[in-house]
Image 1 (spheres, rainbow over the protein chains, first blue to last red):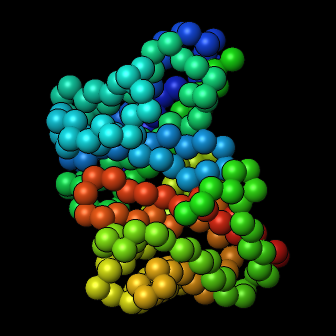
Image 2 (image 1 turned 180 degrees about the vertical axis):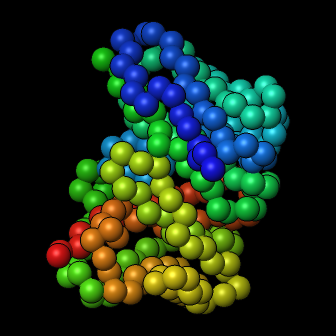
Image 3 (image 1 turned 45 degrees about the horizontal axis):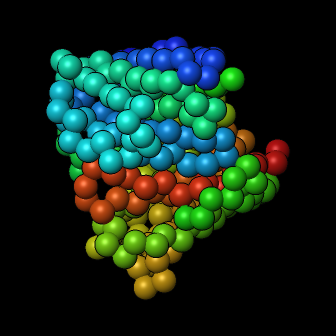
Length: 115
Length: 111
């Protein structure tokens, strides 16, 4: 079946622009995670949804970052007034049950470049 | 784990040999440990996990060893193949929502 998909795959934004990154998790998966991966580093947790509820947003680096999952399926990560330090790959992952199901299925990521 | 920026630790092995990738973790409260494989341009792919009440778990061609005394985790890959070339991340979880990834090790398999 289809895995996790993300769009766009690549995004170039000028500093100060707003961007929206989309994640389509595996159908029926309860949990959805967003991560930020800088070049040459491991993914860093941003936020977690269980269905439509955002249960943990402690990893969001600033109030310019906002995530939503209004119907418990597709999720959007929005970054307002982008800065150069926001340049990274943004990964989405889903898992079939709650947080203790550790087999997370990752999408290919969106590479964001802020110029 | 400590970030090494662009210069990931690298392991180079001959095809057919066994590979051992090591990871040190810092949080003694972590109760789940996971290994992920990431190929270029792709998201991480789950390989195997282990609970803190275990010291060894085997999968297909892979074995994870956990030494809680020295907070050390290792991934052993038997009969390494060219398709195993990737960056490998260990990750830890304290039972909550947040999974903490290490900096990664790049595995090169020489044909």
